[in-house]
Image (tube, rainbow, N blue to C red):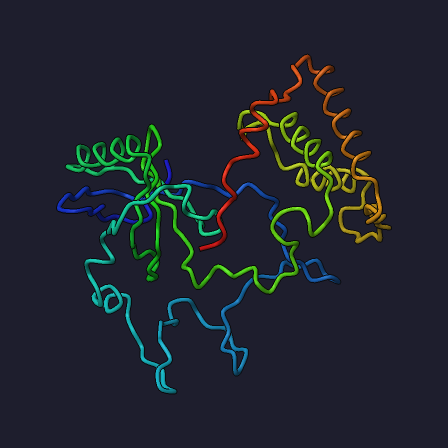
Length: 295
């Protein structure tokens, strides 16, 4: 059972649902330890005074805000007292269509579960969100920091996904990107058709369990190999072969043809039907509205 990270209530209109916040994700990655090269002693993270380099105990660290050239010290209780309501409430300030929130804004997901007395309002909000196909936009304070957040209903739970503030998402104006459309890069209509067919042939139902961290697998295979060969404590030099990059003059049509042939061969080997949409579907897709810019 995941530990409770926060307790408070969802507030929308005059409705109030007591809830607990739980982590919705977990880390599943290789934990690289830091070692001193010559002795292989573990190197840790230390809290040190910047001016002197002297280590500081965790209990001796306090919070402060620099203001007018001086530090103003604040205790955890003072921080919470600054706005008691905001530190205990997920305050829904509005609702919107999920597709209108650019994916760049989504940050970290959490599960919300009702606490005693909040089951009815919790279920009401969950089902109302699902029926209306909307998400709630809310303000919440977590870890002494206010977040913008989206409340998203699944059949089982309400998920709180923290969102980045507009000032945290960079504009694309400074990037050298092709103009909207294809004229700027002289893509042929046939190439666009083939690229669309390639996407269709590789389209499948979303099943996250079929994917796994192949890089982790390769790292652990290397770890086992070095261990088995008695080289666990040796740093070895490895020649890295650079991957080939496509020539700008490469025939896109030929590359697309080979890619389509490759997906067709894989489908035949796996016994799956080749997923190419009928012409009508492609026409419909071509008329779909363009994706929205960051906003």
